[in-house]
Image 1 (cartoon, rainbow, N blue to C red):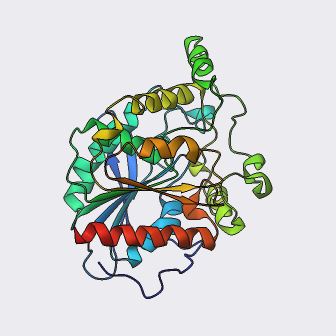
Image 2 (spheres, helix red, strand yellow; image 1 turned 60 degrees about the vertical axis):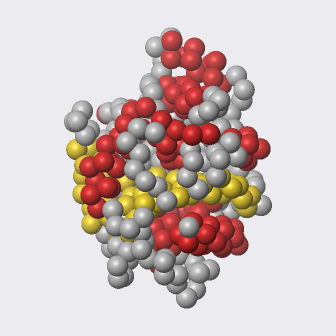
Length: 320
């Protein structure tokens, strides 16, 4: 594995590396947009990056892809169904509402994409880098063990193994679904608007320029915009988390796992998520004190600390 001369460099907050973009057609007629990024020279391995909610290829390429490319890896990124320029679950005036009736649909999409797109284009050992909701979906796929190829290691940032929502959210969301209101926005959720642009009240990042990257893309291409979540999505996410909590579920994820947790994260609180990660037999948890939820989109002091741990982890697993 090649390491750049300057490990602690600041990534650009606006330049996406060159890539090959395409769409993958799913059997139900939906499609997923994906991109492949190659480093200079022969790749030393392949990273599949699983984005979080509302994220899309360009954002992840700026904050994670550039750093992994500099370390010599091929990167494959995609927009989840319901995000970016992939197919949406709802249409028309409700297009922005992040909706689902069961997260299994995303896990099945992931399984198909890995089989038909990722594996044929993989070079060297295979790694997963997943953030937030992407980490929850990735964990669901791994614990099921169906069609999982050999994976060298997994890196999770602010994994949504638990959510910072009131304890009664599961019951309330299920009631709204039973009342036929599952496609309605959950409480305090809405289409993307000026409230989402307020840096001063945000819970994601201390870095204003990096926080605004997603907003700039949303302004330039409104088709990328994603709003809040529906009652159906909330019920489905809490159901998926409950399944992860079952005895033996996370214990079945046996490859090396590095979990990076943000000390000031109120979206996926470390007090809830770290104990769950530690149920994975070969997992290690690192707390980045002071950071907010969008850890790789944070100020340099937090990002550098996170990348220091990532580099040490990758050195250990690639020597094994």
